[in-house]
Amino acid sequence: MKQVHSDAAPAAIGPYSQAIVHGGLVYCSGQIALDPVSGALVEGDVQAEARLVLKNLAAVLKAAGSGLDRAIKVTVFLKDLSDFAAVNQVYTEAFGDHRPARACVEVARLPRDVRVEIDCIAAVT
Image 1 (cartoon, rainbow, N blue to C red):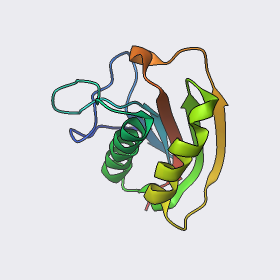
Image 2 (tube, rainbow, N blue to C red; image 1 turned 90 degrees about the vertical axis):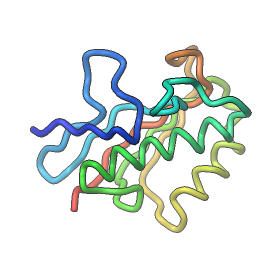
Image 3 (tube, rainbow, N blue to C red; image 1 turned 60 degrees about the vertical axis):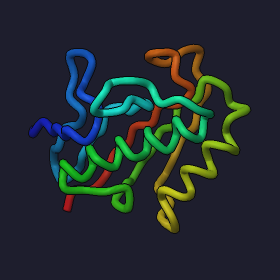
């Protein structure tokens, strides 16, 4: 197993890795809307959060030798499922025509009280 780290995404804030590569796959930890340089939460609506989350996730995937276009399974965690359509619009922009398997679930609370967190499993080039 190989740990993955990207300075272009927020550092892990606990005893875990941004991602692990094993057996031709990369298993990414959940990303939230933290600016990778300042560590501050993005300001704005749920779409602003989702855009930064996906940018952070893409940075981790790139460091692992992968990308959003190689995602196999994505999990979207929402604080409020009524944000589904807004987040789905940003998700569609990020993934384009690629359609990985996906689950979307509403949760009671997310780290730093963000509204969206996304993780994924992707193929490594």
